[in-house]
Length: 506
Image (cartoon, rainbow, N blue to C red; front, side):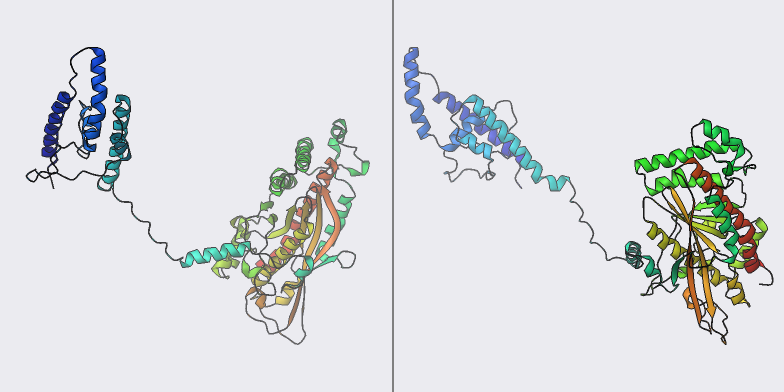
């Protein structure tokens, strides 16, 4: 490797010699001004023709006085250096930049020469930066090759794909093709179950507007211009201690529902601004009845009805209303669940913790501006899972058939924007005579039975509007209907549930 400092010192000496020679060559002639100009005009073409390319470069280079010359630049040689045999060998000149080549062909204008030299220096600096980049900067590490997907990644992809898969149940007729055989009927062609006949009659009275508004708020309603209150709609008693405060709350619900309808709000907005407020107002007088938003509560696949392909049809609803047992009763429920496998230790068809130890009284599905058929599909599948969960709890019951016959009816509500409708879900079962049935069927993954069991989840359309949020009177009807269902849950459903599952003799 050659020494750059010695090379620069030798190059400086050569430049000084060339400078002295050029000064002698360009000494002005004697005489007047015109004589000197004519002499210069005759001498310049002859001198340029005889000058070799490196002489021009040397002239321009010499003009860069006061600057440190780059060791990579082409330096000026003596005219006979490259032809001399005894000349000291020098390093070969590096490749010249485009700006340096342009400088070689220039005729010597000071401004153009300065611009060319500046461009040459910039190009050389960029070239040096590029050449020494590998030394100063570490090479980027190559990205590691992508590994093959793990089992967890594959299962996650399959799980997300299954969640996005289309449901095989697209209409009410498809419900009959599931192994739960879910069938919708009408109250005109099917009898109402015995345990909800009185409830059905009271709800029809509320639908007719009988005794739904406290007498204490009649004048306030009419003064505010919120509608006319009929005499048969007045009630001498009130379920709340402050009817005037309840009037303000129901009026807010009415206005919120009107805003949601006019603005085309989403189902989630309806649930937050209207439906949840309705439940809070309706169940405020009760300590043992509470509504729960279960839109994120995934059901157990073991309890969901299965389609023809054998896959469970997973559907959820928006709300469930559950009975809040006392601490002693909750301990008995936990004791009952200890007999179940750990993954299925829930009294309902979902492991959602807020409702895990609270029996479901009735379920609600909400929709916005249509979609009532799809709401019925969701409620039908949810009701079938409800009964299958209860059936699994009775596997070891000696009087299995008798206990199944006493299972309470499960009311189903559809909230379609303003309007609320009612259905009754019940399980029709028959066991062929001469056969013994000891355990749950294979529908829930239990032990196979010895007898042939015909089961059908029947859902009866009550053809009854529980109320609405379109008018203030409609809101009063809706709140009265929900309180009527709460009374039935506490007085009829819960005692029957305790007799079937928590009775020491069961």
